[in-house]
Length: 363
Image 1 (cartoon, helix red, strand yellow):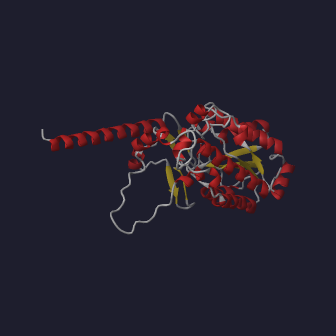
Image 2: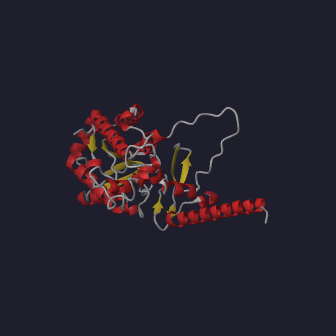
Image 3: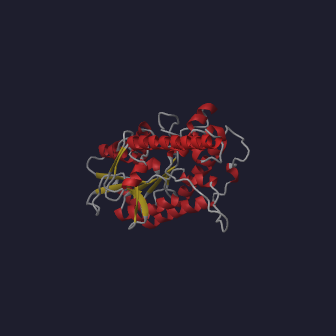
């Protein structure tokens, strides 16, 4: 066989191996989580753009089934039970607004996510009240999406309380430089976003691209311009205030804590370093702490209550499935902290409910 044919055959075998590997990964994802490229082919995707609302939500009225997670959605496209269009007499509605941690991306059953567990705790304490806790979290949402979720979906439901757990999605934006438009030359080729083999290789090689601290080229969290983040936080708070709805803001927790051994932190922070590749371990701590402090300060300045979950929730694998998403145990723990905070503030008593609606509910 000539050298040219050998090279061609080698390339052909390599491509075939990659295709087979990709198909196996897609099949594994479909079995475990009910999501894969096969959903695109069958038009049964996990998410669907709602033209009327103007937001990407979960596929409505669906059971997105996998061996690792089963997501049941209502007619709107939320991982939440169905609600009547109009609020009923004597009904109390609480909405938890956020992203993947609220949606429960890695939680197997709807019944184990934060909103369901909080509803169960509240119903046990207030059996005479019809309580509905709405899960208004969609994976990938940033602060702008969350504000729009409140304004377009939650506000018309007339909630008695909004709990805001924003997540860390906006922080990853520091690591992505705006793309410049190419006016001449050949078009840039991009791989499809649904390729799992590329994501798998990238995630499993995080340790090659990041170190514990001090790698050249990493961002210094003290140098970050937080003005855009603060502006978006204030836009959300202003929207809440305009609507006259009580708010409980919750700061964002993570599995890796600064008081842990460094090697343990490196293991627990792997997915965070994957999505925020411009920060080393110390940089992540600094960035997360700065944003949590800003979120808390802005909320206090607006006259609302804050729960410092970043300080109150223990780290580690018991409470987290990865760097920032809760395990089943963690979801229940967080729901109980929400429950205790609601009780301590008297947010569901008739007198305090009237007081909070008029004053903003500050501590």
